[in-house]
Amino acid sequence: MSRLFFLRVLVGVPLALAFQYVAHRQANLLGDVGSVAAFVGAMGTLYSVLAGFTVITVWQQFIDTDRAVKREARSLRELWRYVGYVEDQDGVARARSAIERYRDQVLSTEWPAMINRRTTTAAEDDYFAMADAVNGMKVVTRKDVPAWAEAVRTLGEVSDARGERAAFVSVKMPTLLRSLLYVATISLLLGMAVLRFENRVVGAALLAFAVVVSVLVLEIIDDLDDPFGGAWAISPLSFQRISFSRSPGAESA
Image (cartoon, rainbow, N blue to C red; front, side, top):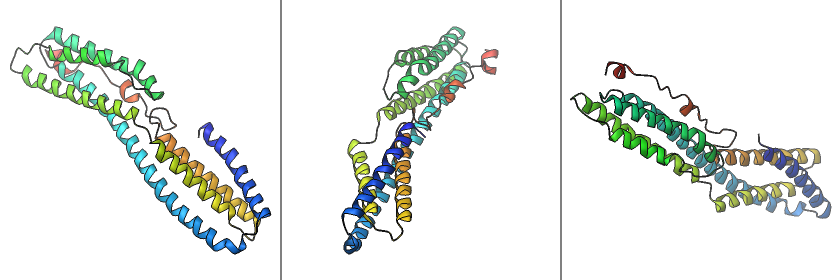
């Protein structure tokens, strides 16, 4: 849990209980209990639909971002292996060196920027250098053709995954949708605070529980909306675990 979660709970629960106490002391709402219950029911329905839609949306975006990162790392590892099957030893060395530089630049520069929700092109020059090195390899023998073709295809997969990763970094939950979610949450809690319970302790406990649950929902949404910096942050291990070991094809070339 983040500090913001505990801050929201520590502020929200006392405020809700104070509003409940003042509302019950200053007004007799027994005659309006039916209207208040209908309001709470309507707001509860709106809140449940809105919260469910938002959680599913940000969760899907989180999953798509994680898949893009892992696909880029996997394609990068496969690219390093495919170029090793080409007999152009100087070209292989240049291509593999460029691949390793690109991986290192993503981890050292782009990843910290993504954690801060900033798009960056720090590794863009290294990507183009890697592409030039792969495309510039000499295809001499017949067996070089399929190996080089697979390398070029995999290079395209790296490019696609990199583009998706960069796009997902800049995608955030719309401010209007977030505002609507906050308004629905506050309206629901205020309606529950106005409801009168025969047992005041039970009423206060239920209201406090509703505040904690609502804040937890907001915490989950905020965390998923920040795929690289939240508690469930996407790990850079996919890139860190890339094994640049010599393939059998490279050894025999």
